[in-house]
Image 1 (cartoon, rainbow, N blue to C red):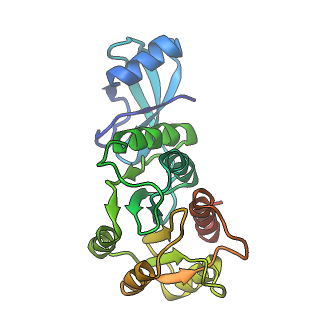
Image 2: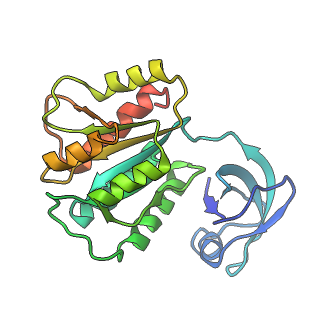
Length: 248
């Protein structure tokens, strides 16, 4: 079933008529050639709704809300703090992390990043990729790709948000696995709400950055005996996290 995003819309009421954006309207009417009476899903206010297309107008399609659907969102909000890789890899990470249930993504220019931040020119594209991936995968939440920053900016973000736990995937940590660290967290705090996972860029995380994150209470973990590429490591960490929380 096709899904339409209503942007910053508030909660919807049964029977309410909503107007799709020009982009969504054109896609429904011109690309998909949908007819009146066909069903769609609506993403609004972190919820999913079932709707019925009333007017397939390519400029302002109208949909009647039929009912609210159960939320597909994970019980825990996971932020992926991703050491900035080459930008084509970042696009892949954004897409697949969204499919796996990430809450938001913070790209960080680290000491060993091969790529360097070019202002925030890619931010709009990253967020568009997240939106399309959220629609494709049936998410009720569209992850936000936050503006790129440096290591200190990432540390400030973690302080401001106040995570229940922060885990750093580090190749020099050989004992504590992410799955065991998550299980320990659940014993300490049965219902954590916000978790951050930090992944290094192609060159790995510098020791000074490790100490910076450790100073915030982050726990270093291993993702296994094999060295994973940066575009694999974050997705692996998300899959492990979702599995431990019973989301996979």
